[in-house]
Image (cartoon, rainbow, N blue to C red; front, side, top):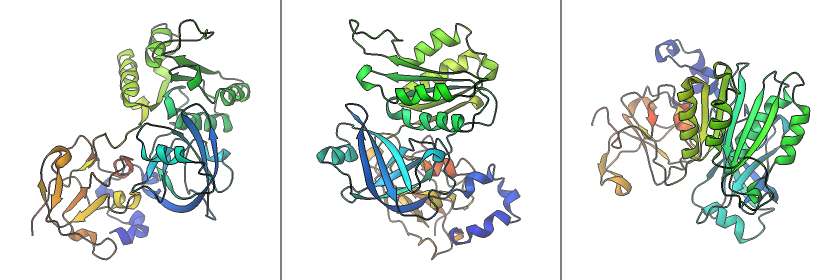
Length: 375
């Protein structure tokens, strides 16, 4: 079915498949040859990377909050990063990422070896469905570390479109030397819809007590809870929350919001996962062979189409043995009975999770994929 997607949207069987959001299904991941045009230090451990790419039309359908990948020749797999600018504000044929230098990180080490300006790369996107909702609720943004990127893009999008919504942006960092984009936030505050309120609140968790910092201290989600939620500064019936950053921050923030009475449907997040995170697993019993996951995968062999396979080992030693591979676009997808995500190739971008219209792909699924039949 992968080679018949153009006809898929007018297919009379769409109602049978109950596709919940056709706009998500229209988004496809495209690959572009590019060149690193600028590398700008933002803090002691975070850089802004701008890639110029070759395309007449750019990242089709990209929206603020989505992400893409960067692939360099020296590394075996691409790395996923949120777009750090709202698409309306990007220069033509450019895309911007914020990349934090992580100890032992493949791309981090690559950038630290030398100035990479002028290097050839491949950028792919767009991916993900994180973004602003369409309500008029107060926007509560909470970000940590390089989670600044996606939230900054959301705020820029709202400001560019002069949305009539209040916005509170809480940013968690360790110390003052970890803060960045403060000037951009100050400019947005000046430009925000004059009938509404915008506030940027940086919160520092490890700033020395004897420093000149007179702003909020502590963990960002605790500060938000103690000084805004419990103080009644926000109407919880008119709040939509948007998180981006480390999973523990998001989990805690979502929990305090739910305890305050904010329904889960108004809590949106983009968690930063890496190779240490569990890879998604496909429940083939739920799969309807729509091929949406195959059309968004950024790595050629991260999802394997197989007619049968057996699983050997457990945990990190788990691997697929004796599978009969299906060749996409050569063998009709309707004949495979199983999709398998290869943990060694998966980059934890979760594009397949977002694209699946039937919730068949999740890291919470059983770790032994089911086959529907054997040959």
